[in-house]
Image (cartoon, rainbow, N blue to C red; front, side):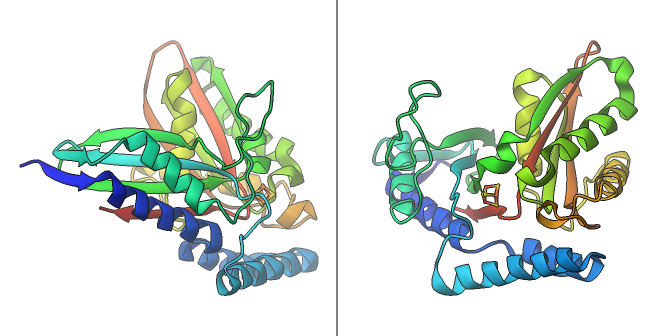
Length: 279
Ligand code: SF4
C-alpha cells in the first residue's frame, strides 16, 4: 500500500533536524571525546579536549553553533519504494528547510566555484537519494565544515597497490591534513565502487555512530589498524601534538572493477554535526 507523506511534513522535520545538528553534537561523539580525554597522553592535548567538551556543552545550553563554520548541509534520504510525496515541490521544500534552519547561522555556500557569489541562505544543500524497500523515509544530515572537507582526498589506485597502498594513502591523507582538519578527526574511508561513488562511500562512513565497526571482520580489523597508525602520527588534538589524532576510522566498501582499487578519505573535524530521523 502506498503511504503518502506531505512535503510540508518533510520540510518541518528537516528544518528541526538541521537545527539540532547545528547546536548539539551527537552523544556517541561526546562519549568518544570523553574517552579520548582519558587516553590522551599530552597535557595540552587533554586541555584542548576539555575545551572541546566545554564548547559542546555551552553550544547546546545556549543554542549556539558548535563552530563558526556552520558548514554545507548534506542530506541523505532513504525513501521507501511505497512512499508518495504529496502537496508540493520536493526539492523546493528541501531548499526551504535549509533556508529556515540557517537563518541564524553563518551562510557559507556560493553559487559558482569561479564567480563565488554567496547565495545568501546556505542553499542549495547536497542531496543523496536512495530508494529502499518499505514505506518509511530515513533522513540523515551532515553539516559539513570545509576545513576537514578540503583536506579529504580520492585516488584511483592500481590493484597492485593492494591493502598496503590503501593504508599508505589513508595515513598520508591524515598526515597532510595535520592541524587543518581540526583534529581529533573522524576518518571516513571509501573503498571500491567507481570514481563517482567512492567519495560517497567515504562520506557515508561518517554517518555511522562512533563505537561501531564494519560488520565484515576484515574491514573491522582494517579500521582498527588504521586508527592505530593514524594516532601514531602524533598530530594530536588541534595539531598541538598528542596521542589522539583520530577518534575513529570507519571503512565502507563496495564491489569494483578488476582494473582498479578506488580509495577515498573524507575527514570529519572536531565538530561532527549529524542527526537523523525516521518518518
Ligand atoms: S573544520 Fe570543523 S571544527 Fe574546523 S573550522 Fe571547519 S567546521 Fe569548525
